[in-house]
Length: 401
Image (tube, rainbow, N blue to C red; front, side, top):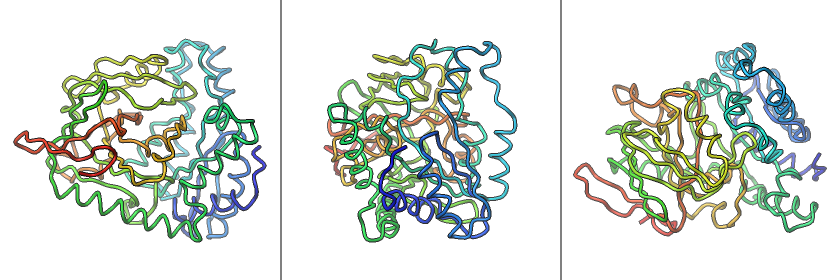
């Protein structure tokens, strides 16, 4: 347990419910977390009920129970998923419910002693149905971070445990704008800035993006009707919500057949307890044909092999230096934070909203996975490529050109 002051936890909970998921009266609210998150879960439940939620349904996933399965269960049972898990997610989607996910780096390295191929067969707590309801905009949802002692020890290993946790809370509070008089209003203002940036990029009708930096020369082709998104998103019926708190990115849906070149990740990537470092990926014809890393490559290779779309891109996102995360210079080892510190790409499912309805949207990538990894930073220059192949600097030294 974190035993932080109630006020900080209550402010984070209120932000998740009001500005993040934008919970509506009468909604069923799904909250997902891990053991150790109970204080925030309870505060979220209280905030949701105060806003008129019909019911708050909590699902905890214990990584140590998963470890027991990976160590002892029969090989041919590891990819079995209890059907009621998926049905729960689909039913919440059918009810146009709200989803609030809590995240942190928990039990780092817990699966390091397990054969990566064996570990890759069990993708829980990720569910294909979860990807489905999000991509089809059936729910209003958000993800928020929660500082824990285990996470703090990895991010600030040179500090005493109590000091490390306090430092992590200070930085999370800063990037989540909890110190503002009205954090929800501050996020609405930031979302408006990101929406304006996205609209400007859409108007440019960029044909492709080229990333050039140390160990990186990657071209990501876009659709003629790709459109940029950022800040707030809309449920299918138009309800606004803020998917990620914090968020500093603008993103779009690329053509899954037009990624070429090689890329070196600029930050570690955490997947289900394994921290992948020194990640390098080579693409041909849109597909990741080679995945190597200093540590943990087998885990990503396993995820990239789950279906035909898992080795193709479903998202490309740009992050400039005006946000609050990158300037901290902290590596959080948590995708929610790190992906908003640097430009990134995602293997797997595409957001349909990132491309206009019609033939292009029908070609957007589909997959059971969606895994972001960071490829940007001050040393990586991003070029916009027009339809004639002319390149112009789009993002350099963390600033829009």
